[in-house]
Length: 164
Image (cartoon, rainbow, N blue to C red; front, top):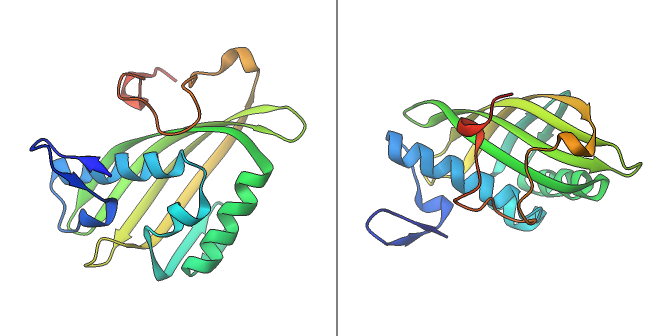
């Protein structure tokens, strides 16, 4: 749930196109918060039943396949922490940039840099996601995201506050 400026609670799918700057920022933060739960079931509910993804070099179609993809992702990565930032929006589309940090099964830390293009249906569900992502191996001492696992706290820097 997200709290609006008026103090109302709303779910991510209550945020529907066409987007304003305020609603696009809220949609991006809702997606970030959901992904930081590392809960494939919860995250998959933001996608339409026939959603189409390109994630790096993988193509995934449908909410069930997305849920399986996410379960596999989070079984192979630990300590995931993600920050997203609105890049652009128009109508039913949003573009974001993001960074996330994770540790693989061998104990190597990575920072992933990426951009996503999102398209939403009239119900506020994402029907298309195009993600370009590059991983960069880092030492644990180079990590930028240190909040407790789960959604990024409001007082923890997002991408607007990071340098690299």
